Length: 124
Image 1 (cartoon, rainbow, N blue to C red):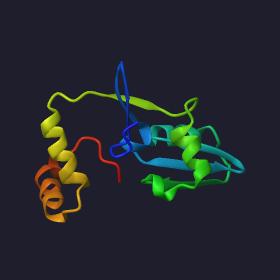
Image 2 (tube, rainbow, N blue to C red):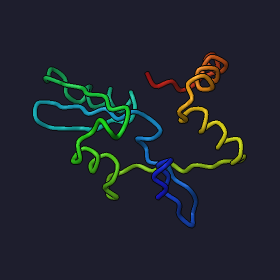
Image 3 (cartoon, helix red, strand yellow):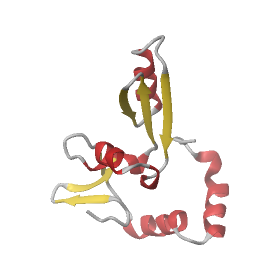
């Protein structure tokens, strides 16, 4: 596993852990716990528990989770979710990754302002 970019490399391809692609929602219904990786999963859990006390906590990154939650959402091979990643132009992907995840703010701000109107899947 390449921990710098949270990828798992296998002979069958490269996979990203689901938390890397979207925020994780921890949903507590009474004392039962659920994890959702999308709004549709969240709505399904809420819909299956009408008239129940529901608490929702959003995690944007691994540093916000305790070790037990990290295991349950990301590391447990029986429950983690992997998404296959394909990159047609590795050099361009590396350039964009450096802009978005690098320490320099100005290039990231410029990229966001330039591409803001063309975003299709925004996680806010």
